[in-house]
Image (cartoon, rainbow, N blue to C red):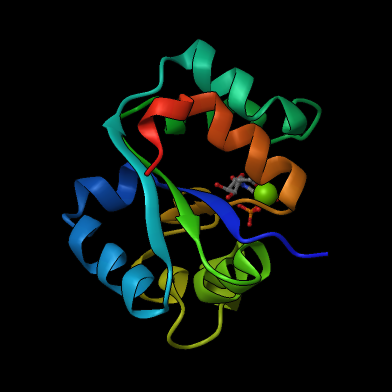
Length: 139
Ligand code: UDP
Ligand code: MG
């Protein structure tokens, strides 16, 4: 059964490009409500922990360096069918393969610097939201 929350990050490339406002506008217009939000920066250690699931993949080192290279926006989002609908809104991992009108098609620079993160399951949405936010920071 689909739950109603997902987790996102606006990644360093999109923050650097002044795309925070445009991306948040697309998120709100797609019907997501912001439950929690933080402008912060990951240490290399924290980025390594967040992406531990990808530890064995060849791009892990590059991903950790990139995700700790500058500030990010982390947020918990609420909507019916949040995880799947948010994946549809952001588009494919590789922006050259992302559908027209998706966040990655519009804002991503490359498969690595692809503008946004979106949880891939309800279980990971819970884990990833808990990584950043206490109960008192959710509204
Ligand atoms: N990534 C990369 N090279 C690849 C695949 C992924 O640099 O070949 C990066 C990219 O930033 C991606 C993240 O690793 O968003 C996590 O990969 P995943 O397969 O989970 O893609 P996502 O769920 O973000 O679409
Ligand atoms: Mg993923």
